[in-house]
Length: 242
Image 1 (cartoon, rainbow, N blue to C red):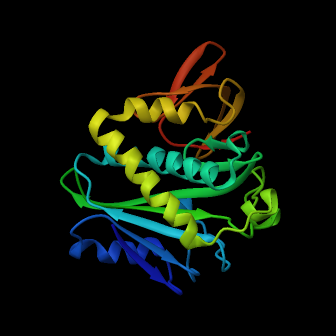
Image 2 (image 1 turned 30 degrees about the vertical axis):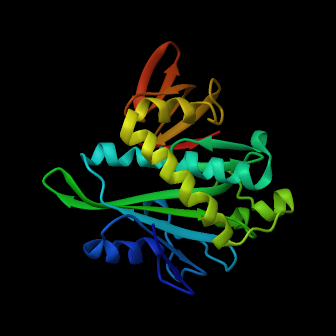
């Protein structure tokens, strides 16, 4: 699989997207630093040197809602990579919809961006940021959000971005092959096995509305299923707070 390693870039997602017209297959982009990194909902992403900033660009078959399920593939690949590097399977969990937690703190985030027309995906970019050596301070994140942590700070393990990608790329390829061959069901089961706060009461915020309920499962579209006093509701997009 093609790999593009850059010293500095505005955004690995933006650079990966620019490669899409000339793609003959999936390609990874990693950068030593980002000058305009971004997270979900247009937020900035702190990008000090030494952390992992990577994007995978691909041209998947299928509709946009199927392409969006690859956020769960990315999460599983990240979990697999972190466990392989640290040997600490109990320390890592997956927070819906697209974060990886280490000892309960936010270690990594995933951002999917796509382009296409007529209900078809032209290309998909999966952006991944991992706090390998440094994490934002609490005052840099939204009030109530999971506090950020770093791999180095929590485990004492120093991993380079290149070493991380050496594990992440094949892990993603393996889960992608499972998804193509067998659909979302095995991905869903594997994700739920690592889910943070499953069976516990959480808060899901959509715009100005906030729901409180028991995190029961995710459905076959990847939506969060909350049980609110016996009433089950599937929530396709929200921000989750513990």
